[in-house]
Image (cartoon, rainbow, N blue to C red):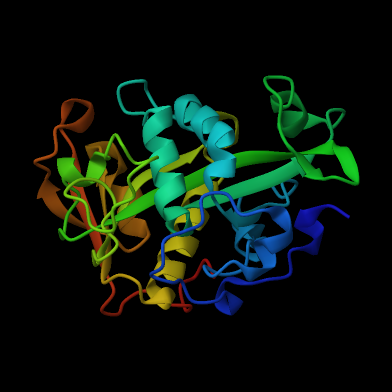
Amino acid sequence: MPRDLLADKTLESMSQLSREPAAASPPPEESKANPYGASLIRVEDPFKKTTNNKIHPFSSLLSVDDLDDCDWLEHAAFDPIEAASREKIEYRLRTCGELCTGLFSSAYPTSAGPLGAIQKTRTFPSVDSRDSDRKRILLGHIISTKSPSNLVTDDSMDYPKDFRTNYQLTPSIGHNEDGETVCLHSLCVHPNFASQGLGQVLLKSYVQRIKDSGVAKRIALLCRERLIGFYEKAGFKKVGPSKCQYGGGNWYDMVVEFDGGFGHDDQDF
């Protein structure tokens, strides 16, 4: 049976996140022991208000095993100057995959509509070894790290170039395990599925999960001026123009503090 049909976990039932570093690539048979929570989360109820009720999405924590899919999606959704490099995505998935979430669907190559059409663009992994023709399709993702700064900085956007051979718990750049700020570096939805409410539900689900886990005091991000309203709808507040020069600069700092004001009474939950 496809994994999305078996995904009966809810956001509320997920295990707490751990401060231990994530395993780079856990073997499938050990996935049930994932210390960062259940690997699959059913998210269909919030999507009842979206414009496409045929996607049947499920959410899953990401790891370095998802690098090909995340690299493909990142460059499909962002301008080249803004997209993270493949190596930077690998660093974040390998170092702190517990902070990264993917929104998936599944379909057969013969499926009608955008899910079937998108399968013709590249090779996707199978959902289940017993049904190799049914493919798992990454529709959206959130990729984050932690930082000791209250805002996203150029240092937090960077990464140690020797990360594959020299793991550091609290480096001067990149992910800092002792940081109290989750820096949300990438929130994207594939262009073929944009403007259907997927990004807003993915973001709100993520904010709730990080808040409930207690691993950070806030989530910070950078956005363009045209997207300020989108993030405000999810509880973020505009701080002002950012000092970050990544991708040419001209960003705005946005932050959501976990001191109340966002909970399960949100109308989209």
